[in-house]
Image (spheres, rainbow, N blue to C red):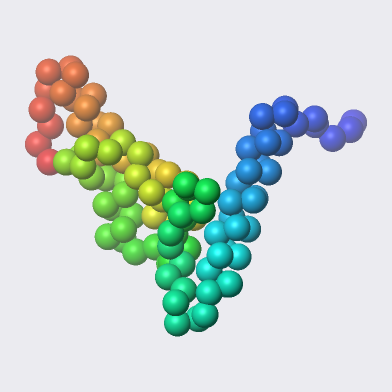
Length: 100
């Protein structure tokens, strides 16, 4: 039994993610310590390396009144899905309004 062969898209995705993680951390480490915020954008992709808080997680993952379905990640590189908005849109589409 050999190693399972990865599909080209999977390999590309892992490579892009590794480059973005490396670039975002490198960007912060290249700044003087007093200027490091551990959040920003690299190649147009948001990153946030600060320890996540419950409030940031909640506002990213469950914010039904926010118009954005994709929000900058609460921790890491990329975007997270605002599940609160998805549920709100689905309930509106079904003609039901959930009480939040």
